[in-house]
Image (cartoon, rainbow, N blue to C red; front, side, top):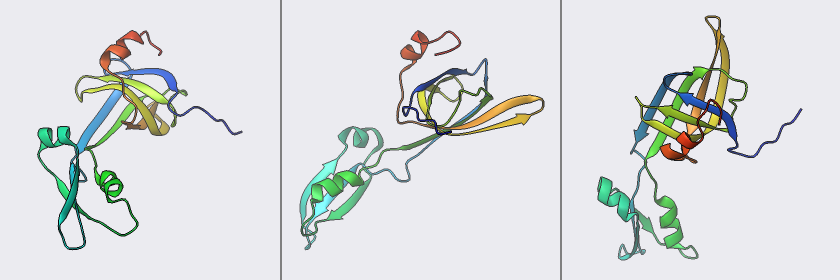
Length: 157
């Protein structure tokens, strides 16, 4: 049977470091980050700049060059070249059938600092040592702040 859900619909679970969350990992990477793009013409003369000023102030300048091409919007192309810090998180928790890819889940984990509502990109449920566990990959596309999680507490959200 085919089940269609609204992307990011809350699954009704709060993963908490002191309760049902067994392990969590969080990492960031600046390897693909770009916060300033200089647009040049075919002779190499600068014709414009697209930048993320807040990111430059926080992290310094990470720049690329975009050469104008006939018939193309160089400013739009330069804007598409801007890239933020990549964030990735995985978690292992006591399994619940409601934890499935496509839904969102609330996480509160003080050690890694994972707080918020995250999209579940993937899930893998397994039986280990007489208990059922789930490994999930979390996306950072939809996050809420800690206050919103506290308002939705109570075992299920």
